[in-house]
Amino acid sequence: MNELEQNLEKYAALAVSIGVNVQSGQTLVVNAPLDAAVLVRKIAKKAYEAGAKHVYVEWNDEDLTYIKYKHAPDEAFLEYPMWRAKGMEQLAEEGAAFLTIYSPNPDLLKDIDPKRIANFTKTASQALSNYRSALMADKNCWSLISVPTPAWAKKIFPDLTEEQAISKLWDVIFDVTRVSLADPIQAWQEHNDRLAKMVEYLNSKQYKQLIYEAPGTNLTVDLVDNHVWHGGAAVSENGVRFNPNIPTEEVFTMPHKDGVNGTVRNTKPLNYGGNLIDGFSLTFKDGKVVDFTAEKGYETLKHLLDTDEGARHLGEVALVPHQSPISTSNLIFYNTLFDENAACHLALGKAYPTNIKDGAAMSKEELAQHGVNDSLIHEDFMIGSAELNIDGVTKDGKREPIFRNGNWAFELE
Image 1 (cartoon, rainbow, N blue to C red):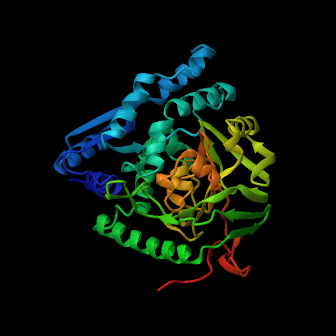
Image 2: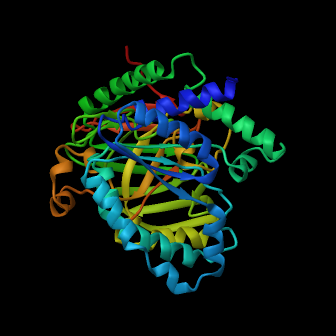
């Protein structure tokens, strides 16, 4: 068995045992691009060996996606196959685990009218809202991983041949997901424990506000009362530990939807719906985006912000040190799963209900009363850099350093 085969075996094992943590008798649903077929077969085998009852695979093909956006009538983007949405809901209700292999081509839809993309994104989000809400509340185990695809690899390494770019991206993925280590599963358990210590420290602080300062950024973010920081492993409704993101370097919590003021500027491109948005800034007043600019992808950003009322409010604040393994690779991945774990980020749209005490058990009305944002979207954008400083403001008004020059301003034992 060559090195690539060995690493693919370890990657599949990591996805099954640490990512979704498949349980005996459980169904696993895998959403994957055609390019991931070799890995998906290994994942299916590992899942059955772990006791899975079924492994269902939902394949997607970006060439077909492009053909539809290019040639289908406008009304096609206002419909979603409800049989599929209901099927995902049923699988979630029956306790399935969900693994998504996320490897989008950042330039796939660059010549498509952003309105068509926005219409279908909204239509799909509405149809899948119950399913997505279940996952965001950690009712089910779910996880995201990535594999190299030709278009994505060439975007990151344009000077290499396609074969070289794919090989290089595999090496990077194996490194930042700890697969290249002798025992990735143990390494992830230790990594989760480190993130848990940071989570415990921040939860003990219960800061009422975070203050961000960097070139182009001067932002204050109020946190909801009884907010809960999370990071690394999560725990499902049934008490099963899983890792929503592989890789992950973040700890994150909930802003108050009406408590964000100031301006923030992005530091990495945002790949949204097959289009890139970059060089953008958002100005907030009382929680809402009241002004925005973008050097690239202005219309795409406008459609994103106009999705619904909640799309102009924040649902997440996340802290990632600039010296994280993904950041020190000095690569721009054009893939949010990787780029968000290289830099501090914020998310427009829906908040994770688990980021407030007892939030998973609250109704929509109760969540809203506590300042929890709701939306059809949840879109992370990166704001971290080596120049970012963040302070936390305690309930008695004391200002304490959290980040200095892009990294943690303190160390925990």
